[in-house]
Length: 149
Image (cartoon, rainbow, N blue to C red; front, side):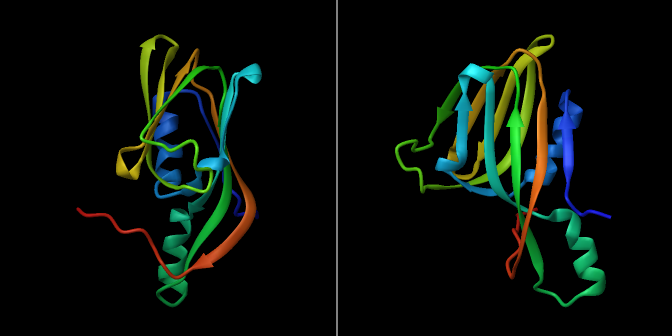
């Protein structure tokens, strides 16, 4: 059985699942791409494998965690806006905190990718359609993200 995650979202509830899986993903500014001709916005990130944490806690020593290279793309993108993201620095590192969807005129709306430090990417979409796929490149990491309660 493959451990690679593949998810799709066509409504806000589906996107919450993708957001939870992408929480604390790290990526470089250069790993973001807007493809206006295809009406697509895509990114590749190192996703923290939250779903592996239960396995690690139960079967292995503490301090073992995993990240996996993951692709995420949004279809039907009409416009992209950024805030507090230095697009002229492709090696700049971003930490993804959440992905939200706000419907404006059904089925259209705005997808917001929220990054630490106040960065945001807002995607105006004709209809919500998102796809997440692990690319199979896993690596062990000794550090797990921590959040204040």
